[in-house]
Image 1: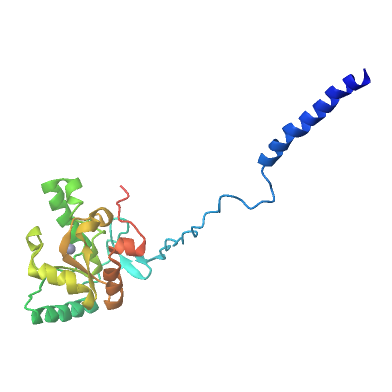
Image 2: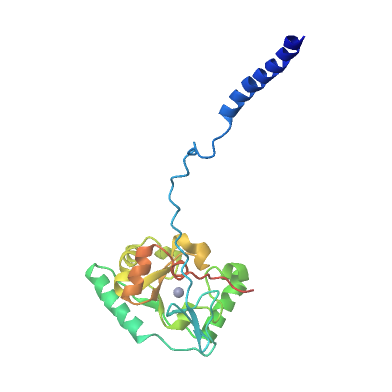
Length: 229
Ligand SMILES: [Zn+2]
């Protein structure tokens, strides 16, 4: 009787050992090296957006030291510096350079006062409506022509697009300190249609930097060009 009673106890003990053994082998070993290697990709380098240094002096906005007039930044109504002498002489140097390549450049429109721009803009609004006028004509105070640093050259119309003069300007303006201010592929950013005739004087160093960046001035400075209302 004693032997009979002992057997089931032994069998139970054997079973418990046999059943638990395989289970132990599949348990993860916390000390083992992880099977999946951690992502080897390096952390992408984050280039922080440069924060523009915006200074307003007597109502005139300078972004990183560059005078700005666009849809976001306006000029006081009484700001009337006339054409910048530096921009004028840079234009003359550019016109001389162009002439050597058989290209004739002339100024169609330079400095425009606030009052003149007001009349011009109103005329376009009367003709085409405000929404359309805003795509090609600046509201008074927002025109780059009021800075005295911008010129419209030669034929101020779409007929200028693709002319040898327009091509020459696009390729060489920066060598003389100018940029094509409203490029064809930046309409949504500048807020203006493509104007291959409108150049902005920035000085040779900055103009070359903007040209080489492939950015429009707003992108280059990290600002926008949007009317508040
Ligand atoms: Zn213009």
